[in-house]
Structures are given as structure tokens and as C-alpha cells.
Amino acid sequence: MSSNKICVVVVSGTRERLQMAAMVASVAAVSGQEVLVFLSMNALIHFVKGNAKKAPNEGDMGNLMDSKNVPDFRTLFGQAASLGDARIFPCSMAMDVLGVEPADMESFIGEPTGLTRFLDEARDAQVWTF
Image (tube, rainbow, N blue to C red):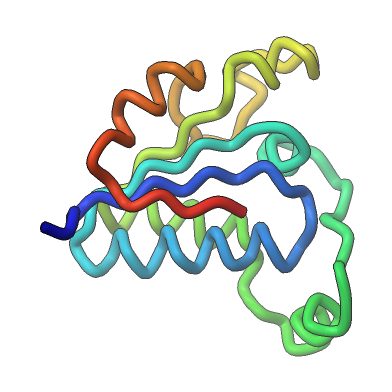
């Protein structure tokens, strides 16, 4: 039996991986699937309000996305949360390590959660990692 829930674990801070994770989350959410996103490690810093640091490109596709004005991964994650059934959680451990408070996160980011809770919610779901 296939699950109608998709869990996306995002730990990479590179443009292409963040972009693909955002595309999976947003398309699934607007298609009626329940989506849970867990942001941790190198990905988390890109969701702190006012962070001007650009996600580095891994290769030519990132450069092409820049030149073609592809919608930013933050925009897509925000749309997933506002237009569909997506909940986006920052990793509480990564927030502690970075010294980031919940109020510092983008408005579409939910409450911090630990990996144990996220894995419990991911039970019987499709899990995608980026």
C-alpha cells in the first residue's frame, strides 16, 4: 500500500538540492498529499530571516537556474506551506548549534522539532532526502 504522506529531509545547503527538495514538497503539497519537511545541517541557515548568503551552485544547472530566473527554493517551500498541506520543521539540534531562535526563521517555518519526533511522524510515509 502506498502512502499519501511524503517526508522530505533536507540537509544540503547547495542550490540544486534545495531546489529539488522544494519542487518535490511544493508539487506534492498542491497535489493534495500531506508533506512534512525537516530542515537541518547545512540547509537550515538558508531559512533564517535576513540571511543574504546565497546557496552555492553544485554545477551548471545551478548556474542555468540563476540565468533563467527560476523561482527560488524559499518561494517554493513557502508556497507548499500556504497552498498545500505542507508543514516545514527546523531541526532543534541544528538551531541550537547555530544559535538560532524560532523567531529568527522565515514565517512559513513551523516550530522546531527533534529528529525523534520527525521520524515518528514519518512512519509509513515516503521519505525523500536531499
